[in-house]
Image 1 (tube, rainbow, N blue to C red):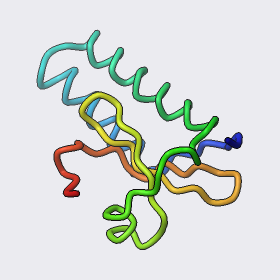
Image 2 (cartoon, rainbow, N blue to C red; image 1 turned 135 degrees about the vertical axis):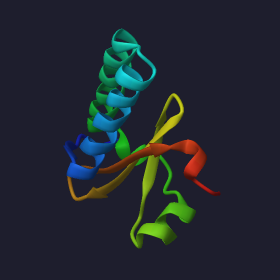
Image 3 (cartoon, one colour; image 1 turned 60 degrees about the horizontal axis):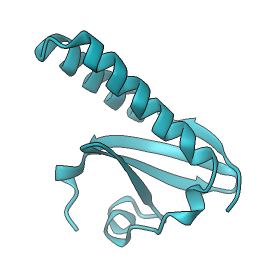
Image 4 (cartoon, helix red, strand yellow; image 1 turned 180 degrees about the vertical axis):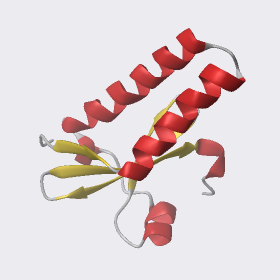
Length: 100
């Protein structure tokens, strides 16, 4: 297992912000939104160690056109690529949108 630098794409940040906004303003649960958002960020940061130990997802790789991995946080999938010593978090999407 290697150590990596974790970078988060603008799209992934927008995904996380939209999720926070939904929980906070649509579900009227600001504390839950804050805790969920922090947990999501912590899960992303955890990829700095051992991100390469997670198997490549072949169906996602076919969709994105490069070796793609995913790690789940509750009902969301954190989609990422490894490029050298960098983990690039590409998107945060509901797991239900992923077709195996």
